[in-house]
Length: 195
Image (cartoon, rainbow, N blue to C red):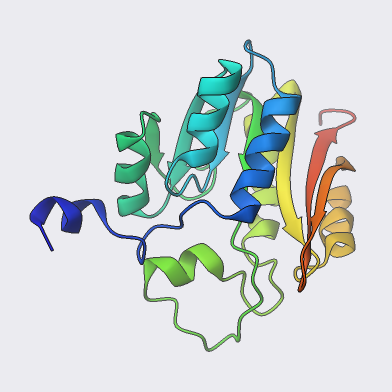
């Protein structure tokens, strides 16, 4: 492996576009406008963020905990910040926040010592990254902002909607696709009133 490939990571260290990425990107392109300021949390390779910037013209920044993902997204032309969820961003900074979270339910004892496992595993319930995201996302949304969150039936869509409701979000499914082992939904989440 070359030094550059080692520095940039490989397909085994950075989540690459798959059906879920494509669904979130298509939904975002249909929902967003060129004037939106957008954050993609967990940008991975930067595919969704770059697609939105290229096809809609929105200002998009990505964030990811994985340093290899940050490098790949940057290589794709996405301004990116290494951060855990929305921790690096100021209040009311974004019109839209996009997130395709790690949602596969995994045994609590499953290894979380490699970047691909971190990108895929949502913990035992599949919601162990979704819930902290929902706890924090409202802070960075502009007053009329919203979240586009990809969820799976493996994670429990109703449970995610209920948790979001407890955090002050209203929810509507705006896109859905079914596969042999799961149905993916993109939820649009917004606050009715700001606290």
